[in-house]
Length: 295
Image (cartoon, rainbow, N blue to C red; front, side, top):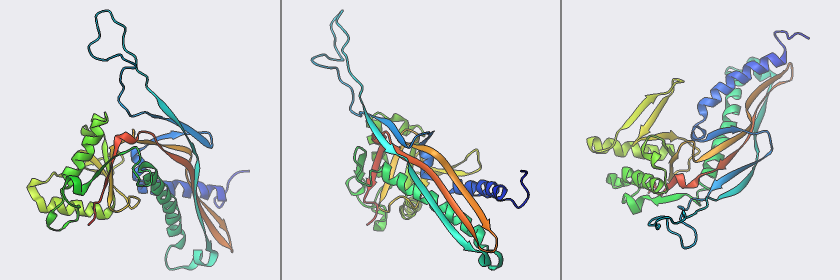
């Protein structure tokens, strides 16, 4: 049967397209993960052992004798399994509100329902990538041990560039020198971002500068000390994460974000958003968790 103008499936496709475009603008942290599709509910991946390789037994990498056998070493990986998770949210709008309210209740609900699903995913990404702030397997550094004080300390007593450079050094020592070549990111909460901006402003010409670049989709990407700056409410205050984009982890996607609207004339409008996927921490040693940013 041919679809008419008022048919539900036509409206569903229109709203799904519009709202996915809106929601994509809300994604922040996921931009630094690799995206891979999966057909199954259980995903498996391998986490490479971070320890530097050494020759086995009594062999040596350096200084082998003439004609001697090559020393051997084994690269090892740990198999990890992760279940796909659902991210879902919906609301019902009474028909009276839909047709008569002074504000666009339906439009705003569509936006906020989609945003709620995206926020839940971003929260989970930060928790997985920092191992729930425990930092297990990641590099770690503390502001008071490097820069001397927290980022919001009075009289600009802290030293955010020193803390960031130490975080980058730890990543480079782990073998990821691309941290100095524009591949790095900085995840930070709005409060700690404000502290960083104030510190830079107060230091003036002595401080590193923020830079901006226009992306292909028209968005502005801010960088600081060569790190892509991602400001997100999903990042816990008092912490910042520095790492290598697309290397640190993967978002395994079973189904991308879908947003639907279903009208029941005279009764209600149902709005729902959902997606299915899982966050995988694949390379913890390419990240450094900075703590104690707040006094």
